[in-house]
Image 1 (cartoon, rainbow, N blue to C red):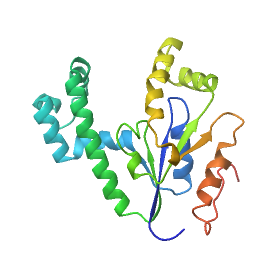
Image 2: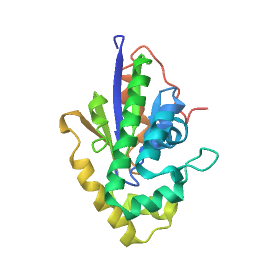
Image 3: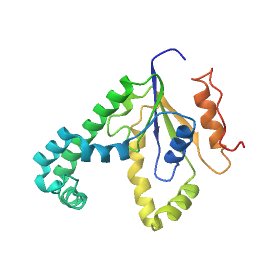
Image 4: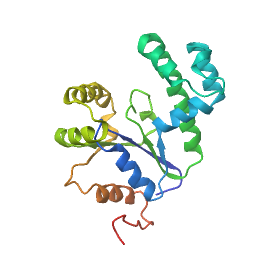
Amino acid sequence: MSSGNFTIGITGGIGSGKSVVSRILRCNGEKVYDCDSRAKWLMNNDPLLKEALKADVGDEVYDDGGRLNRKYLADRLFADLEIRILVNSIVHEAVREDIARRRRQIEGLFFIESAILATAHLDVFCNQIWLINASFEERLKRIRQRDNLSIEEINKRIESQASELSLLPQDKVVVIENNPDSLLLDSVLFKIDKYKPDCSFIYMNEQ
C-alpha cells in the first residue's frame, strides 16, 4: 500500500460483533478508534466540549470535581428532545474533530468503530465500511447472554438501528458475516492483508 491513510469504518447492528472485529484488529497491531469510549473520554477531558455542554445543558452537568454527571445528563436527554439533539450534535462534532486529528498522525490503515457511522457523519472519513452482519437468531442469542434483555426489548433495538444502516453509502460497504461458521478471524485478516502485502500476520489461534 502506498504512503498515506486508508480509513475503514466498522459498524453493524446490536449483537453483530463489531467489538469482536475490533479486538481482532487490535491484537494484530491495528489502530482502532472506538467512538463510544473516546466520546466518554472527551466529555470528561476536552475543555471546549465541557464548556459547550455547560452552556447548553447547565453547570450541573459536571460535578465539583469536573467529572460528568451522567445521571443528570441522562435525565435531561430523556426529558427534552431538543436538548438530546443539541448534545448529540455537540459530541459528534467533537468526535469528528478528534478523529481528524488522529488521522493526520497515522500512516496506513486506520479503523473507526461506531454503531452510528452515518448519523454522526463519520462515514465521510471512510474509504471503506465494514458492515458486520449475523443472523437474527445468532444476534438474539448473543444479546440475551450479554444484556439479559427480553425478546421484545431486543426487537425494538434491532428495529431502531435499521434506518441507521440504510443510510450507509452502499458503494463503500463490504459485508463481513459473523456467524459461528463464518471463519471471522480468517476473513478479517485476509481483508487487511490486501492493504498490507508486506506484512505477515500472526493468527491468534496459533501456538
